[in-house]
Length: 209
Image 1: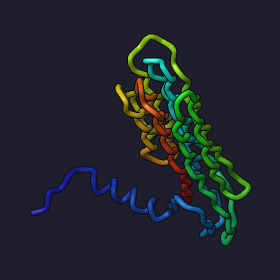
Image 2: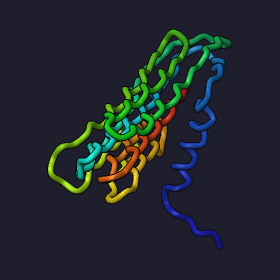
Image 3: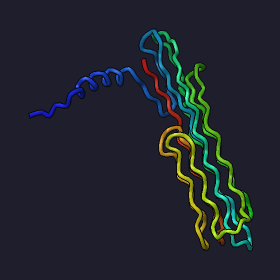
Image 4: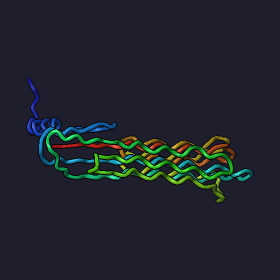
């Protein structure tokens, strides 16, 4: 005996045809228009990388400031008229790299800007900016301040600060497309390096007709 849930059949009947009229790009490629008409294009730029934490200070028992999280990529939704057979190149932006760890007595390194996602000459969805690196902290505290989280949906979590002789925690990378990476954590009191920044999420582009 089949278990029937009211409405599920109708929902399925509505979704399946839509999936057959949609193409999603997570890597570079070409879109070939199957018909003449309007196309709904959704483009997400790549997220920026998080900044690394600031390096500790020699002889200072205090930690450093964590890096800033990277920004999420921009989102563009547009209706584009195309003719059957038109070929449109698609470029997917790569997530920005996180800032590398900073040695003792140095400020943190910034994350890199995420790449742009392009739909030919029609759409340019900009990548998010990278997070700023953390600075050395002279406040009276045994630990450095933790890093900021990445922006955008699925942005990575910033790394924490750790005590003793350990280095700062690295920021997490973005967990979905278009999210910014988390910043690296601040260094511990006698650590040698700050934490790395997390990598931003890659871009995404979907075409619906």
